[in-house]
Length: 335
Image (cartoon, rainbow, N blue to C red; front, side, top):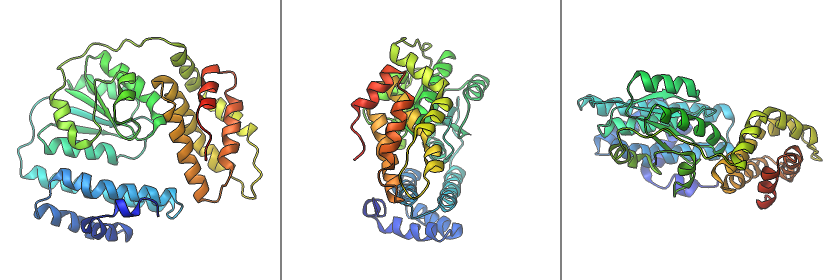
């Protein structure tokens, strides 16, 4: 299985994985608590135990070895363990004082685990933090930011297709002069995408966040977006994403015996969102990653050649958008 050797490389992770695989919450909690008693920190639990386990869960779904429901059950188990570990640590410490950091998962992202992990890590390092939830809309985040006199907002984004939403969130939060820190696999290690979105800072690892937060300015200037043809085209694509997806589905021609149309229809918003993101941050890699991921998922399910048909359909659907068309043409086709 792809990534298995790396993700389940240590005895502690392999022992914990047995409980996850068996949907044994009690056993998983016991394994995590035992590690805390042996001297593991909360950061260790998150980065050395839960993160590799969750990566493996996602890989099993991508490889078509696990169903969506089983993937969701394992994710819920990891969330429950994380919440329990956070409470164990907090009972032995005084609750952090001061203005709170708000943590959110980007709009359109439903898994709460990344944001919850960040919140637990921050509180463990005496940086008071509150997790608002996953898939939060911009007005709700802005309301809480102002109401709570927030120190900073941390935004977790795992998918490149979420970056257009992150852009709007950064703009609105900074209008309240509150710093914004971003992180997650939607961003590149060098923080170039984060900078392009106007984020105050980028944290590549959750464990680095406390120091990043402490180094933030108390207040920041409102974000002034530099208008460009690429940004304007990205906004048009976002506004018309549903219509473009429908046009792509109409143009899609499949020769496979299996009907992949429902699966492709479900994934098209992510592909189009990645294209919008690539225009905003000027990084074709966002599109490449979307194609590579879609190809992997389809190939594992026997959909050989389907991604090429999807690429052709998307190219046809965005043909009136010159910059998006050029971006698609410049990105190497799926293998």
